[in-house]
Image (tube, rainbow, N blue to C red):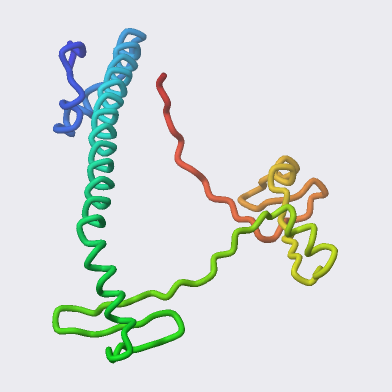
Amino acid sequence: MENYEDITLDDFEESEEGKKEFTLDTPEKVDWAIEQIIDEQKRFELYEQAINGKIEKLKCELVNEKEASGHRTSWLRFKLGEYLQRDDVPAKDTKTQLSLKMPSGTVKYIKSKPEFIKDDDILLNFIKENDSEFIKTKESVNWKDLKATLSIVDGSVFNSDGVMVDGITVEDSIPKIEVK
């Protein structure tokens, strides 16, 4: 593979022999390799942008269709709810719903329940003053500051005093080559 400028990235994908023969041994070849990577990254970014555009369009179509479907069936749903609430209908009545099994499916009327709308700041102040047993606190490690004091020796983690730290294991990561 002397004339590397005629090589495409597909050549590396298909042939194991070509990969073994090709070496980056000159500044020109290194520069060419960087150009190939940048071109492929640009191609992928355009591809990703096109795919994301299609995904967004399809999501909008799905939301619109869901809304239209809901409108088309809302009247029948309302009438089924009225039917289930009648005294002469043998619907199963639980705390949260009425249900009736029919040959084509089961109809459920989910009973309304109160919804709490909280102002967290006002509520927290009230609870601090009146019902402090409902206050919860969560302890956690300040990882950012702790990490700065740690050292790794032979795969073990030690703090600044030289004491081995429990609860942390070390896993090597694979090096990553970035081209920008």
